[in-house]
Image (cartoon, rainbow, N blue to C red; front, side):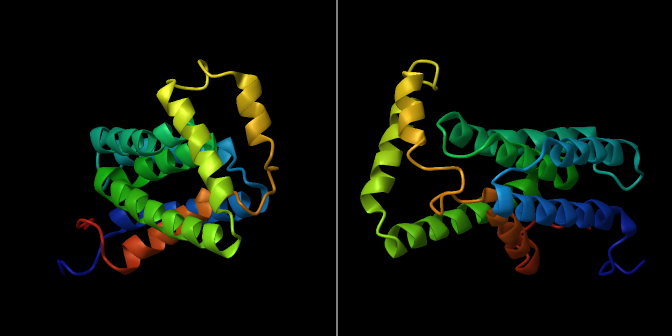
Length: 192
């Protein structure tokens, strides 16, 4: 067997991951929402595929990928930096691609998001607004979640920006870009 030619095993979860990520990117860009049916059905498929397919990575690697997806973004969700759909999308990627690829995509997506954030801050002169948002997230982090901070204060601060604000970043789009970077530039461990 030619070692340079991939088998169908690794291609199926990768192809599905690309389809799901690009569908999520479109929905996140348009509505700033990633639907549960997309993320949960993908996680179930990843678990079933890798558990029962002869080419699958196994239940342990899939569960590890889901855990990496959850652990990588849940701190940002906890302090109000992103939505739950973004966390579930990264978990869905983890169920399909396993630990190393999920972590690589997380890093590439985070770098992409950081660069885009700097662009928004500079291009729209939003430096002081951004400092206020960081202050709010810092307070939430220090007080260990939104249960200990006054919800009225948080809601009034967060409502200054509507859900369709150009200052919000659709992280699903950043994940799609990060995934392209990881696969095009070979920033991943061998999957075949």
